[in-house]
Length: 303
Image (tube, rainbow, N blue to C red; front, side, top):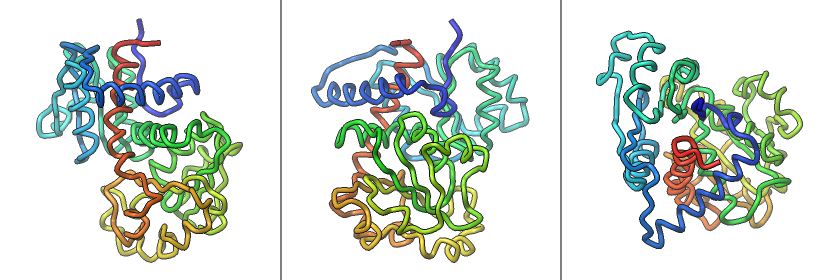
């Protein structure tokens, strides 16, 4: 049977995405109840990191351990990828020894190429274009608190980055409304905007975008690898902070999410990040449960 990969959310149908979300909620309950469940016993996940990480590494490594399997951490210093071995060759070799591979890398094409030459499931742990694993956690958090997200309004504030673009895919798949407020010149890819236009609206005004929103989401102004642009971005994004005034324009019970790490009082005020509408810590924990559901789906073929 040909392996399934998870490169973007579009590798799943809406039905499969909802299944994984609900399964994540169930797995979270099972762990809280102390239930032992090891569907991936003796399975090994290879984790290739070109970019550093806290949440991604811990959640995948802990998830495999809890499932009875194990995970191998590989940095560019630890593999021939860091010495120029073709991606295709590394994929062919590693997939003969491992049961699944997760890559957190700079160039999205790296993960795409790796998957094309792997005979085991490949998971996108983050690229410059998409961060689908984080969306699984965000969606799980919403479903846990509010139920299905279909028909709801989500407001994205900030850079049209990999997180924003993953939200765009999610909006189209699960049929919710996404309004994006970003500075001119920092919008998402035009082709993706066109493909998701039925559910996505691009604006440059945060207040217009946040009006009557059920969920407000943001991310850092300068992502990893963009540190040299920090001062330029601070000026461009000066009016794109999520603060109490902006949250007051959203619905009174609107939730706030951030994939973390956050730069307090930059893209989000401390009052909002630590406030009663913020669910960022539940969201962060859900990386573990959502990715366990994904690992089970890809490596144990549940449906």
